[in-house]
Length: 135
Ligand code: ZN
Image 1 (cartoon, rainbow, N blue to C red):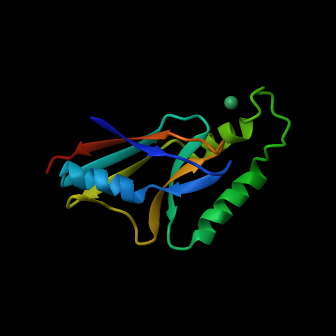
Image 2 (cartoon, rainbow, N blue to C red):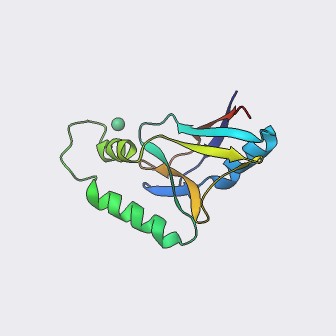
């Protein structure tokens, strides 16, 4: 079964911490051991795992992606959001997280982020699939 997390973004480009929502779904599933796949169906968004302790890291990632892929670059795509499509491809649309002892297994400083590259938008969807392992 696929479950969904809904995300509302407030800026054109931002990262939104969804760790608590993913963790809640895993705990509710009562799966003790397995993997959790986190995926977004959007072509102008991404999913990444990176530092959640110092918010400057998220600001630096967004700032650098905006410098690397500026919205002002002369892209062909008529919708005017090719920078967002390129950023989505660079970051990727999914992450796989181990489940151990009924909880997601992340590094001490890691958090799971939905990456908005063409916001603000409401009702962005993140799919979560919890796959039990064999012990
Ligand atoms: Zn487009």
